[in-house]
Image (cartoon, rainbow, N blue to C red):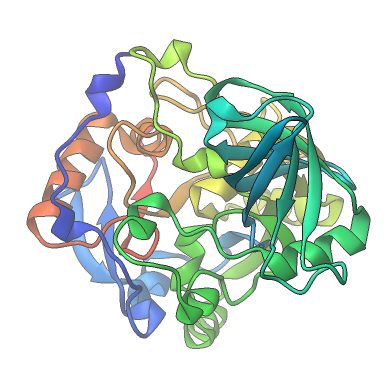
Length: 360
């Protein structure tokens, strides 16, 4: 499909720079493609009223790490040059893939020392060697530390990589450390938050429990590739970056039981959806799953596992807007986004949310 089919104009005033307070007071646009009218304005706190006893919410419990590293590169015969690297996928106990700037100047074999102002390794720095370089500024870094020692060092010298559309407007601050993390995050490894989950609060969890709605957790470590623009003119020419995920045997069994008794699988966020669809068999049953997924969902995809999707509002021409258009229909979602823009909904990571029902 032509990528420009997924374009739209978004005024800058619609981009949220801070989340709603409390979290579940954010707006919720309910989209039912086969209803009349198909759109309804609500609040996230209203979510239990749109679900049925026996439905199951599936959350991504990944935890954002301070994956933005600043440092200096060096090579024989050359002086120190500043480098910024955003870690996005771990390949081994001492190896990460990262997006580096300025990517064109980095070469295989370069040494990079991060965190000169930190308190790491007793020397105030964390060192790595560039082992490989790919297109788009992506590099493979092998660190001098490994395993838990590397994790501790990254926690010390790194900082939260705010999405570029927020970072371009204001610097990261202490409040972001809390705001850019779900209340149920527990598995370290994400570069970006699963933002639909940012709206949940203990009181909303209590209301869902009272309504008989189940909660289940999967893990997909969101990578920085989620922010990359689609540069191809046709979706067939776009390459997705892979992300590491896990669905336990116990969670798969419980979700299959939900569907067997007529309950619906409600994915909280596109990350949970992409993982569940990666783990689903052709008959819709969810299998235990662990590994890397680069699933790219566009209109025409046949959904196997997920019935309802809760998700924030996404960038124009992004893979995520393509995904929601596949889920509820391109025309429906184009109309939904135009309504959201004209009605003052707040977009992107800290913005409002939507509850999408699937168009079959």
